[in-house]
Image 1 (tube, helix red, strand yellow):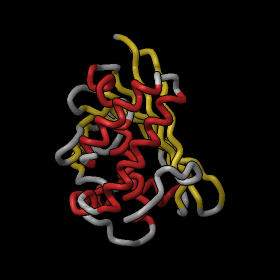
Image 2: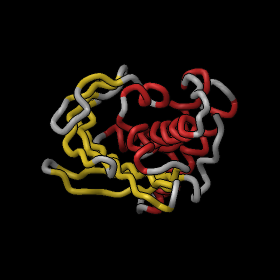
Image 3: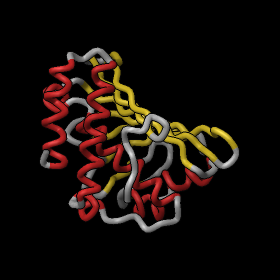
Length: 204
């Protein structure tokens, strides 16, 4: 399971802010084009049988207003469902944040996946920056690419222990650092947060 997370033509990343009811929200966006049509990509992102092959086992009701639970990870409520164009949901894991997924046809047989993750600004963000969540989403988008190619997706724990997996995470961390700096974060602050995040993921 290999890829080039620093290739802007493969993955696009951005960092920003958004007002929330109780303060400032930090926003990270990640986008990638897949060689499949929008209906297949929608199914890969919403069918529990396919989600467990590249993401995580999910239980609950994957419908508007339904509650879901990702095994060993987040739970939440589906707040918008517009097949096959996208969905929005709360992301409840050590606090509440929000995700928004949009699928857009780029050309025949090619579809763009856009994910926006909005989280309250906390000490965790100040310490680790956007890469704390961003690297995880990078890994997920890579696993989705492998699944859509028809290949078997390697268990994440095994992949993360390989040299290729470690290199991917380190390069993804550097890319999120660059996006953080572009967003206006002081380079020294962004780099320090990125180093802490890369150490947590890959032991750098």
